Image 1: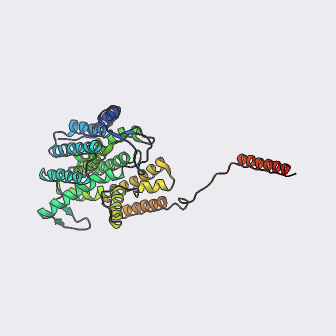
Image 2 (image 1 turned 135 degrees about the vertical axis):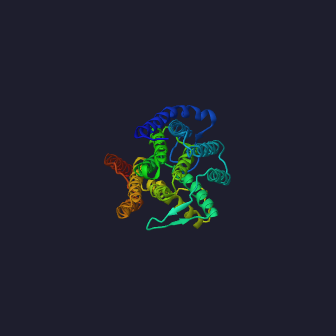
Length: 374
């Protein structure tokens, strides 16, 4: 199947249009099926009930466009099957609040299915010299399953502010799509580029309804689907030499959610709590605690993710020094954002007019008291 530049743009705009059209539909369906997010704890950033079935629009946009433009590709069928199963799992969690262990086992089952259908990390090229490191069958199986399950959950865990998960997924999708495009002729990765354009288009179509102040949420159906698609599409490349791009590039592009997930696991282990237990220690919560507000916090994380995306492009072109510089810039900005010296400073506004009225009232009361005493 020949993939042209026109097809890439057509896939993007098709997914964008489908997603944009299905968001209002998902908002109408949400209360009918009970997919409504009611704030019940201090972790929630919203204060009123919100529909959380927006993942339907992302799913329809991505899958619809993918089937239209690449449905006949041999590597896309497993992606369609796995993406559908993960989306249904997420929807079931939105409706029934599934136990964490069950979700983990179900995700592992889907990852094993993908491995059995040929989506595998079979080797890692030695990026710094000649030679390759071959994985044995067992190691290949374990690494593939851990990769799919791990990346699937990164987007879900960072989905805590309006527009954050959809925006980061769109940035990641466009970054990986660009890497796949510039290496497409050499490694046969144009199908990955097309699929990522579908993913990015659906996320951008969803954002007008999800950016602060949000009118709807994507729910676990949307966030798990996005993470899973990024994970499996990364290993779709038909040639083995694409593995280094498949693994390294998404890790760099998803640096923010991966770091946030790893830090959350370590934080919960250190405090003796279950690693799947939710808390308010995520990056976006810390930015909110610093007083930045939802819009600025989300835009800050967009910017850092875009820097990481460009670093990933440079790594794919073997411009390691340039990529390291961008990575350091991203880390510095993240440090500045998270160490605001005024975050614990409470400022009390003074109303001079009210102060003068209170002073005048106090003086009148004192004068009356003196007259009574006389």
